[in-house]
Image 1 (cartoon, rainbow, N blue to C red):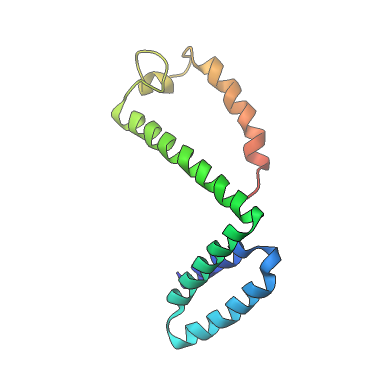
Image 2 (image 1 turned 30 degrees about the vertical axis):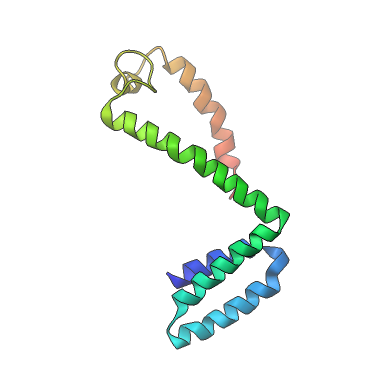
Length: 127
């Protein structure tokens, strides 16, 4: 767990702070031998987040993440709730989810184009 947190901290620093991330990693190995790697890694992650706020690129990245999470989590909760409860709000027709899953529905012609348009974006997107 501590190595994953440390890797996240190093990624948050980016290329501009490569020397600092190398020093953090060297100190992390010392913290591992002392038996407190998780506390050190969490401290490094907090420092990396503070550093991100001081740079324009870091503020841009954090703002993008906040915007995406602020939109995606509520929409995902709504979609999952409608799917589990069988509510027809997000699905066309009176049948709700059952109607959306049936082939040959009126919605199929509309959704097919949307999904096909999204395939190239999904295939060539990078992290």
